[in-house]
Length: 226
Image 1 (cartoon, rainbow, N blue to C red):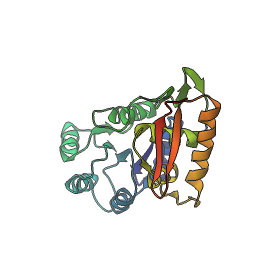
Image 2: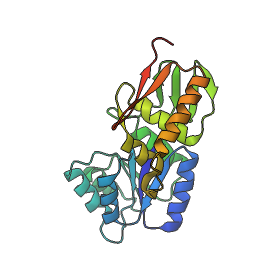
Image 3: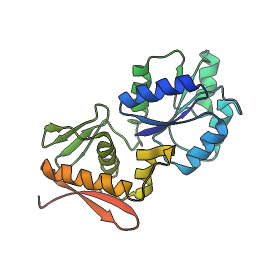
């Protein structure tokens, strides 16, 4: 999964990105409300971690604007404002959760994961199709009950496919979640990771297949024959 960090403290951003990555969560970071609005208009994120003390606009104003525009991405407010009235204001403005600084990285990761397990979310803790299962928190892949170690990006591709098992996942979605705002996307980068994942699934005896829907994206289905 990939989240958007809206935080102008570069030192904290570095710590957050490192800690989240160790928890299986990749992150893009922006330091202003304007950049956050642009990122959310052009990318698909699993969640937003939002600081309120931004240099160009208060985070509460940004949050209200996002909800007014119909932006439904889960938002966790991460801020030094820890009064009861601050939390109430944040939640009423549209935040899905509120965590005060200082905080424990383990709690932040757990709260993000909990947000994405809520009803209506695309992410449960355990995703399955055929004899393949993915523990989205532990980042473990199971094929016929046996644990297998796949590289991080191949695991991310599998997660996207499992979330949408039986439905086509657009190529753009893979680009957003694998590469984020880095822009480091080769013309066939997604195809390379999908090809590698296909081989890994075949080598481990998985009963699922990845189909290419030309000009659109990829589709994961259970292989009834296999």
